[in-house]
Length: 414
Image (cartoon, rainbow, N blue to C red):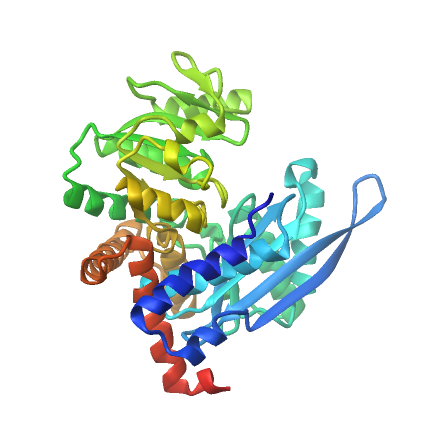
């Protein structure tokens, strides 16, 4: 039975709302997105046929600023997934205190089956379907699963062509050549590392502590490389085709080269091939789910052999699994904190676009680190105050900020 990620997201909020005494009208407003957009994207395939794809954009809540969130191209994407992702974006922005709301977009498609020209047509078609619904002060997309800076560049060009003037701040995650920010490519991973290092202080993890990363895409591969430089030992990695483990440690740079050559991480020299399910249950100090949602479930949570979890993916753990992990004493740093580095640097990109003045990579990281560190410590303090797990503490932290904005504007009362 497929888990509905939107229902899981609501359960996460409900728990925090009860504990903190969230205003009832605010809670009611956050039960549903402010706006859902469904549209078709007809494109001409290379063989001359017309194929129609289904696109979505959910603008969940803009009480704290313009909607913000990525665009996902995936064959399993549906409206419930996009609603959940937009919900999480709303809380993610509030968690780290950036002045943005939450949105998300998606197309039900397997982009690996498209040629480069077909992918460009689909990307431009997505923007044409939303031409009046996006803008730097309305809703700002970015990359997500199976979308890239190149796709963002096509989308930006299409938007500018449709509107007849340059608006670089309408899309983030762009190539630097067209207004992107230094550091954006690995910012999700870097933000996760800053959070993990704070967790390590609390739990007294030392260099040489073992890490398993499920998902070896952009965020997962960068995190593996950064943590290796920090002295951590990567003992397990996986991608959509399967995983590998080696208790002596894996070199993520070498694994990345192997994947580029073979198409996957499996059959890496010196490592044992395992399934994605087995990667999750590999013994380690820190588990990093960096793939898709609904990976840690009630069925497998009890089998995990880690001391802590840092969620780099969106929604990888269900509420039922959360309860099992808490009983096992596994500390979990939730997605709305640990993967917020990406949207934070996207916000920096918007600021740079607005000023037409760009920062160095060193300046970007100097601004990102205190936001992630301060957010972690604020949420840890709430966890201690309420004697709750970190996910609930993060929702309390974020919901308080959303509540203040809604009540100040009066929008919670209609």
